[in-house]
Length: 486
Ligand code: ATP
Image 1 (tube, protein in one colour):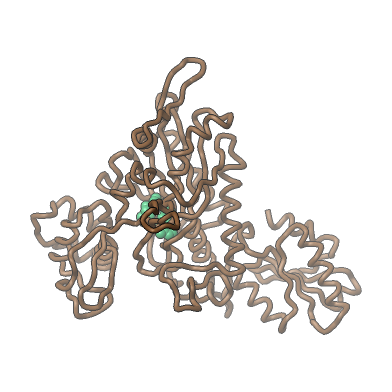
Image 2 (cartoon, rainbow, N blue to C red; image 1 turned 135 degrees about the vertical axis):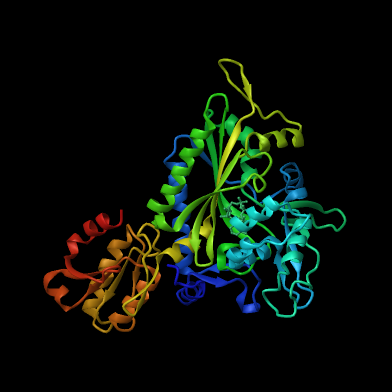
């Protein structure tokens, strides 16, 4: 895995129709992507599995689909208007704009060992903080002043030009990440709203609606899957960080006097790990938990941990898990001047629920799945995707396209299997090329109709991973796939 570069994965993704740069025909819009035919399938499969695991198979979680355009007061109450900002820095020489925390963290990652030996002294950053940053390569939560100081004392050069040796940066400044929307057609009369910066707020502002219109009872969760928007500057790691992205978030509400939050938290950790390894099929050794330090963690959170995946550009956050106390609901109680407490109908007890929030980016699961599945072996490139998420479950080939009897038989099989599975039909070029194409999009099985088929009613089934071939009766095909594709 370590040897596979992101460039190779991105090239395959473009070549085979997983992802394309957004608005490419007109020169592109940075950090936006379009999902091609097989990419759209992979993304949809991931979303469906997430929904199935966390909504349909859970008695204690219900779904929600909130509006993307939302009232500006929601984002004021949640703290996003005031605080949802990235610290940015510009190179005055080549005009590169970067997130300041990324500039520092990348620098530490490459020079970590040397730096720790002999860190320079500075009064603006305490030695404990400095050592922690050098140890973890994380500076989340640092002030602009501290980042400025770090750039100065370590003389961090620009990664894009050789002119700036640490002396040509602008001061670090904060930029808000929310996308404003101006509603109304009469200029001057327009009112400001925001495209949502996370799906989570939809669950908080609808908490009372859900509670009153459904037979739910604490502890219970509200889940949502949908687009969020953040005006981010990114170093271009494909779909890892984009301006619009799909989030899968759950707000799990509970009464802290009735439920043990640490127990709930551990159960969530287990459920998340299991989804990633068992359902998405990711290798355990490429995953790890990282606990947020006190400084990095939001002031209202009692514990935050990230499930990280070893992307080709290093271990990075895939899925965050935070115990957010009653912060969000209490903010909306204040912001909207409404009572959001739950009243126990038997005891009359009133409680403002606490919440544990697992929040994942579906596009990051997508990139993780491609990275984890990408293998180069024996002169071929193959995506060893779990059959559960593979765009096509099987492909059907007639050996020769110009033989009507082979075409007809292959079409019959295709039609029959398509009733249950998404199947690809390919009659172009030679069989070898067809196998290569299916390997590169991760199709688990290729089914070939040849001249023997017309005699024995059997087909050749080739396994993507082992490349082994076996003859299977057409009447047995459905059984075979049903067993293999569980
Ligand atoms: P990061 O530290 O990587 O910016 P975050 O801590 O701001 O992420 P959250 O607000 O907790 O992220 O969002 C939950 C999840 O949404 C993240 O774990 C990540 O998988 C995904 N996510 C966040 N921002 C983006 C983005 N710009 N593009 C794609 N996915 C994202």
